[in-house]
Image 1: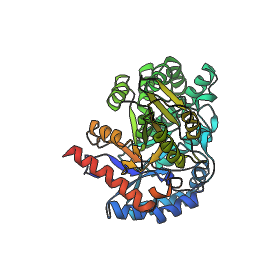
Image 2: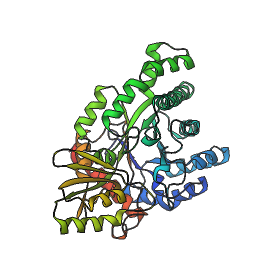
Image 3: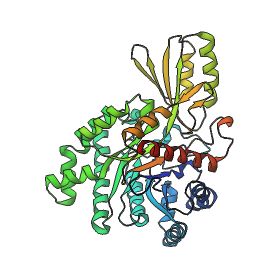
Image 4: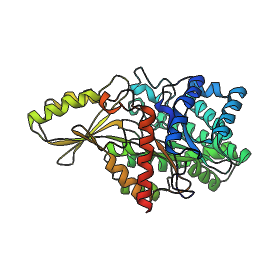
Length: 408
């Protein structure tokens, strides 16, 4: 949807919040969740979708009968698909995901084949005259990168996908871009790492030569292709957790000519340990309620002297905190409802989103904004009692109100 008229960004929520690995279940979720959300937020108006398709669902949707039925359903209900979440390939709910969420990674041919397949589906589903995006893993889980050979393997697979996107544009006129999503503990984690990877690898000489070998074009044409089809997904939660100041982050990408193809409007947890033993013990006890067996909840800690420490998961961070009486600030990668500024003794990073939306001027007509609070099933009960449909509608209304506040 375009919540503030034609000049506002495309805004939706990501269907990865609803458990579904088969196409049949994804399709059922449209009737169960998506249509009711639309009726609460923008009844009777066109409603855009951030569609998540697992590896299995993406294969099943390629069946002509399934694809035709879905396209007819979209048309009949005033829905349109403008972005795909191509991050989680396998099961994403109800069982441990943790580091496996990054598999297959961009060193592996399975990730390339899956993302090419998603692009083929988006080519068909995307309305005429509209750009499309696919968000994806930030290369790989960092611990799996063994050296430059692995980085080159990732680079070449990403370049080959960019060429696939160009071929789609040549045959259909539809422009699609891939958006790599930096995340804590991944190869692409911080803004400076991401900018360096784009400069030295995705936009570098080896990538340009690979494009030329596949397309036969000139150096300038190859450079243009890479910059047009390979972009960043700016996830508000991830960036806040990494203490990336939003204005500086946006300027860093702009200065390097790295486009931000997609913004994920998400918030994490934010808390401060005072150094008082009793108070901090109480915080740890309440924070332990957010530790679950399904997802990684990476923690980034900033000390009073500016030192940064990182923990892979919340239990590890809590164990370290039990013997540390130093005042320090934590940000936790746990997506929490956008409309909750306070969660018991904790704050959310909602203020970070508000600043980001202000810097973006409420968004441009071609921007892709996607709400992605996928943790409804593991949130402490007191923060999810209102139900998913009502909560997602409330999140979207929060973003709409922020857009309008900036624009007015």
